Length: 310
Figure (tube, rainbow, N blue to C red):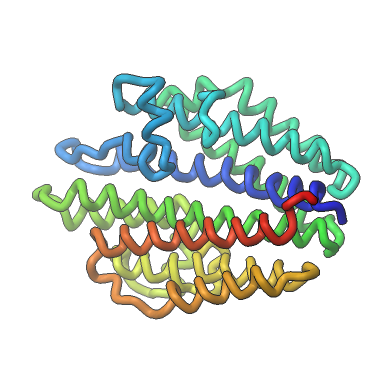
């Protein structure tokens, strides 16, 4: 398999996963606006910080309010982490790899593009945002289901699965970070305990993890148990532990994988040891930052191993 084809399938999967999870990230804060007491102020700018996009945002907007943050994350064409930008990148990578992906996936990515183009204003307006966000998630999952159900388990599939799980691990850390930042902002509120339960419940729902969490944990929503579940659970497909295991499995399908596998194993050894999650403030935030750096190192190793053109 040519390195440029491998790279494009890898990135197509990453961009598709990033679109879905950016929408999930917005969904967390969108629902918190309705569920938290009016006395609690949750800053939308947190979503910019979580995506490490402060400089790009501040160049374009003077006011750090809800509308500007949503526009930046959904519709800003010059923002490389926006939904429209990632959709453009995903389409281009799928277009140039149509000989190794199911034909129907090209049709469906164009359907996603049409849906986003026609309904983008709904996503910006709070009153209609819920339907837009759910619509994007639904089509992304349909595309993922098509790829999982029809692609031969060859090298193209290996790079597709690899890209999806690298991106999913990274975005799961950012969704958890959203919960941490929201919790830090309600710590001094009179209804802090109730607010924290609402926050972590929304984090679970944003990952479609609320039902599986209840089955596994068998207790009410508690922040430290939510964090442990999303980081350490070995069966939930969006947990960080599961994603890194899936990354390792994908690598072992590919030739010359040993250098990258060793990087993944080091991350698993260094980061995924049992932790005490009672303190959900700065220590967890620092852990998530370190995990993001490790995931970036995994990506760099993948790129160096397979995508460096001679």
